[in-house]
Length: 116
Image: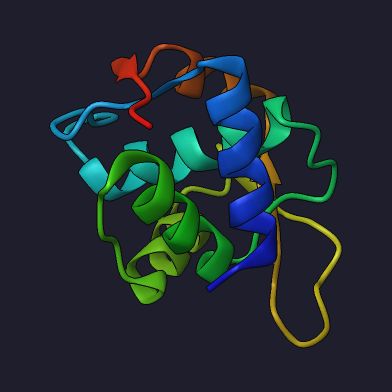
């Protein structure tokens, strides 16, 4: 459960935004695509400091009905620092946001209308 993810999900529903397609990827990597999309959605919803891996996992579940473990999201964030940067921590949890290259990659991810 993530209050941040719930707030972003509500914003996406209100805006009748797009969510990531189930089979979307970036360079053949689904977890990377899903992580980029979630961080991009958060940014567009007004989140300035980014998301923790737990927030990202919860947002993907709520908005797109896609399950991704937080550990896999963390690996994608660490392995693709040209697309994803650490932001201000949330207590002991790291928080991540997009780089400019990450924003460009996220904008090209295949999406579908949000349900709900």
